[in-house]
Image 1 (cartoon, one colour):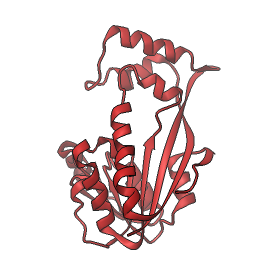
Image 2: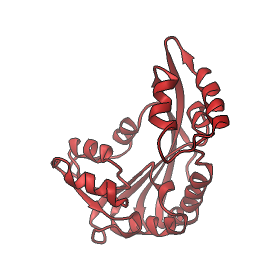
Image 3: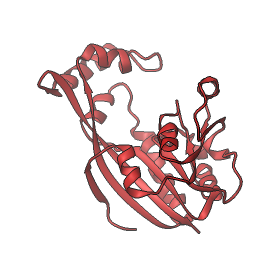
Length: 229
């Protein structure tokens, strides 16, 4: 495996544009969420199968206005609804750590199954460092699941593909105030609102003040696999 390559300040789409050819290719967006990446890939000329395991979000995707080049489906990453060797690539964009731990290896095996002999699998994960990670950590600590995702890659994906490249880069999250950040993230119904955790988060938020806004570094980690064995 090659050494980790630092791409500096960037964003997911800029890095994807730099590393893989998208136009005219068939790809899967595994764990697509609301479909932002799928739409961006389609805008670059890809044919995208965007799968989402959550039936509520999948229903919203299906009900949304059609997007040329995107097919939305309700399916988990461990059961991709595509024929073997039918796809040029598979993306796990901040989604592998959301796959149940017991199914991560199967999901990676599915990615290998559906990609062509010259295909790729691109896994993008938030790194477990940086001021944004520390900001979220008191109430939304994903250290365990992200560690499990990396272990699955080392255990399974590393042996399923001929080559693996690792990259890191940094993007930034900005907010005008703690009130907006809290409304968008802390007060979400699926997160804890323990007062002690809120107080610690507010303290870390204040340390991110840059001029009239608050800015936090989000470190990203990307593993790009090419050519299934």
